[in-house]
Image (cartoon, rainbow, N blue to C red; front, side, top):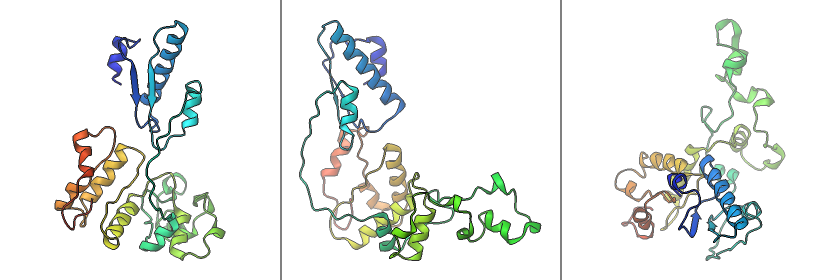
Length: 250
């Protein structure tokens, strides 16, 4: 929906249907659009005018939440084919690819030295180096540990995996891990495509750029790094149904 269209005709005269796709991707403009549409529907009901039909689409949305917002409107579910799925949790992935969460990773919880301890100098000694993030982060305060980490749940895992989980910032996407995992799947699995779900189009392109710059997916292989999103032109989306050349992963 073009907001300029709404500015010119707030009643959407002549419009019978509005389809809002990927409605689970909450944004300021997206939520504002839903408010405007709901207000318009209520006005049409009050004046007994032909009611606009609003269709909200998503594969992952909490349908009850949006149904209640629009006056307990009906929910239609389209069933698709199911395929065998094996679940691997994050700790299993860490173990499988021997992953180490880097100290300077954006996905790692780090002690902000500048806010508490100030700059490092020789007079403050080894302890200050540790607290400033230069030394063994295992000696840092418990305040800087992943609050969701429970060591009793991971006793059978390696020390490296436990340290990863202990220092993980679960609010940040670990693109290093995603890149390593995609490369691992490409190296160890047979023929087939790799599908990665991410929160939005910006995150999709960040990962695509990283993979295109990698040794494994650079060159001709980068032509088969495909973005799937409602903002992508339909002609480009159709490429996902094509088979890539031999020895190239889609």
